[in-house]
Image 1 (cartoon, rainbow, N blue to C red):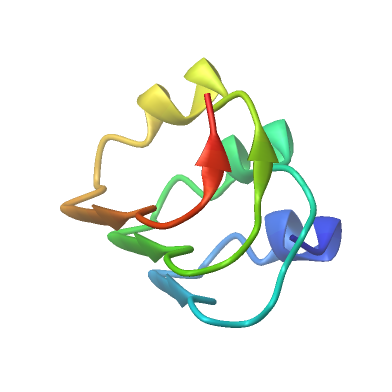
Image 2: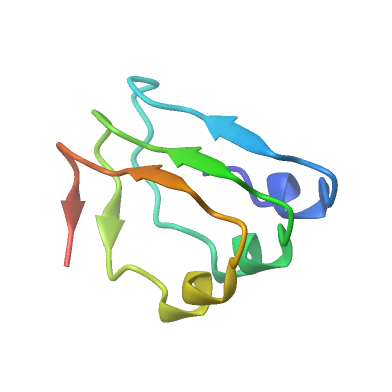
Amino acid sequence: IPKFLSSLLELKRLHIGDSRLTSTIPVALANLTKLEWFSIAQNQIQGKFPHELGSLTHLMGFNMEMNNLT
């Protein structure tokens, strides 16, 4: 997942599913405090899910199916 996305502070929806991504989830995405929807489904994202994303209080929808997260 490109780290520059964490600088888009007004971002409300992020759908990068089925994009053949192979990285990890950057902790810096917790900076997206206005994020309401986040989808990374059907990629090859690996590693641990960052607990810092739990601070996204506006998040109403989240999809991470079909990845290699722990």
